[in-house]
Image (spheres, rainbow, N blue to C red):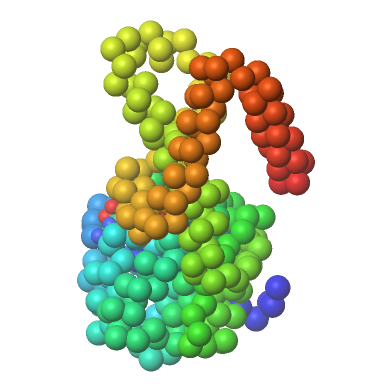
Length: 292
Ligand code: NAP
């Protein structure tokens, strides 16, 4: 990690869980002089200032990014196209732009649409860290510590811009890797987006059963562990589903086929299939636990 990382003016658009945690983490490093927050809600930005997460705020995004060295867009995916349209007319030539969106190709496409080409100072990114909570009150400095951050630079991304964004995350304690945007979306569809769909679907199915009160009353630790992520922000996950439509729909198809096979095995007393499936899954899960 280079120790020469220094930012005079950092602008974070969307000071929620991720944007706020990034601000907190960078503040602790002392590598950033001024952090300015922007968004659509004055009360939330005031709260971020009171908490000491940001130094200043500016509701007008065009003003907020003026003279910034680095702009981090940390709004829900569906709000990014409008943000990029504002950036197009207000961003300085040397300002580096990155984002934290959970899907990457849609962000790159939105940037291409807004700017007419991909700016050389644009470095798409995604921290593989989060919680089921939202908003600046949930933000904490350690969120990215020892977690991975995936950057998906495009062909024209300037290497100095990539280096700056890499250093920013490394200073937050993260391990940074680079990947093609399409590959990122396929990997995340399997490891993050699909599990969220399962949690949402399970809780919704149970919540709509007639005897739901009794079912939730007897739900134990396993249910709690498995469904924690169904408390995540519905708007954010709505946006992720649509942004990563293709890869997620494909993964859901694979999973539905496997579930149907499981259903068939249960209906036909296929003891061998059940044991084999559960044993294979346990081995894979145990290996994952040991390595993480
Ligand atoms: P969050 O806590 O809800 O924060 C979102 C922020 O964006 C809030 O400050 C919100 O401001 C602002 N915002 C929302 N809509 C806006 C709009 N139309 N214009 C301007 N600002 C707007 O959400 P988050 O969890 O930090 O997620 C932010 C991004 O990080 C998303 O793109 C998500 O895909 C990505 N991400 C999330 C996680 C996770 O686990 N949560 C992990 C990795 C990446 P208001 O106060 O006005 O609502």
